Image (tube, rainbow, N blue to C red; front, side, top):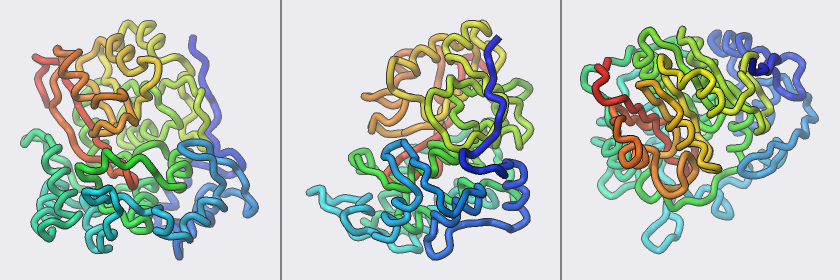
Length: 359
């Protein structure tokens, strides 16, 4: 039997309680950054000591104090150079109204498709916003009969922190040139450790919930468990599997199955009756292809990059390009943009076995 990690925690905190955090957030007690003070916000949210000096290892190795210093530096030294001209030189940042309009695309109380249409219609010709709108609309695939219910009570602290980061970093979304952005920001390791590599949007979680039907979800490479936790809050049954070799300061769930993903699938005969969820699959050791070859079920959900930047799944091609070429028994039925951190271009993909009746 696989061992399980049995302690929900945030390292350095004696009071971290996921349900308590969400209850506080729902009641309006949000500890979002004031005056762009992310350090104090994270310390308050996760009940960390005022002198916290934990080193976050991810895309860079940083402390909260170092991240706060980078935030105070603003766009200096190219820290906000997310959009480049034809010569590779930074363009002026998009205006804040365009940043806010991009954020609103993912709000749970609106119809995403309609908001995205308005985002495009109100963009100035040739602007960054226009390029972002074109990119997101071109990539988006969602069956016309799939209805996503609106919600005024949906709680997602990661989404709220992400909204703040877009405003602070002057980020209005990905466009075709985002694939060429090779830098990130010091904020990202903080988000990755406390929440995960990519924000689970309300629309994305609802899509997974609808696709599950009466089945369960197996999340391979579940990391610190934030996606699993969010799906469970929606009533979805999820098994989280991860060898936990990567370090996370926060763990959101107490029942992660500590096991190699490929071995788990083999032991469970391919999890034929479950939906496979992959969030930010790693590119090393052929991990993604091994998992997809071992899975025997009918529905694959992947949250990762939708361009060829090589950050997830495969170094030289996107996940949908791989499925089309190597797993011809599956077809892509859904591709929607996810809230992307500055300089990233992320989406949720759904692939279904051909012949399976879609919901």
